[in-house]
Image (cartoon, one colour):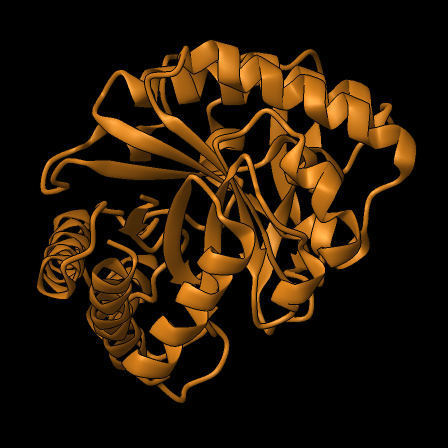
Length: 320
């Protein structure tokens, strides 16, 4: 029997209250405590929605993250982030990591990951994958050497600390591979980096490598050979018939579209998820949206989470 779980990783949209408080702080109209209170209210609301949806793992929605990299960059004295870069083909931007010296981690965890107040267990933590991190960075260094340094000095110790704090899934965001592709000679180095992460947490948490923003059908076999517990597929972009069968690794199925506002039907979504599970026969099935929900209005994101929970309930019944 396949293990089925539903959760939503990545960045969740902030409320108007948080946006207003943050802007007010920049203009001297609100206090730091006002901003903190607004963030606490957003987190409380997000946890409540995840509970209502019946999701299996709880995410903090990266509500305090400026982008996918900044908290990790800020905890390394030899890294900086200044240049704004467009986040793939979205109307969003991130500050590209810049390597200024030998990478090291100051402390055990970035500040935004140290406060667990209000986040129930079991938890999912979202991090950039080694490949994404090394390709998004501004550097003159060899990209694969940088990938290994970022893994050993930043990602592995952070993942180890998170696994020791009640996080049962370490979710690695990997849109770069799906959107831009990957050269043949880079696969071995990506495998080595993921092995470092796997060894760092020692089986105390599942590692999910989530590809999105592109069709990965042509490289599905190679993805499934990587040392991770599940591979994430953007089913808005990828045809399930391209993915082979008899997977030996778990499937993270991105079955809701995180970049469009229409809310999918629970029945249709569940029907597709069951078809994917029956076709691929993965040992574990994680259900979610295909990407972060940050591009949606918060109310639409909330409805998507509730619909995810409905669909997951149907899938669990049908795959029992």
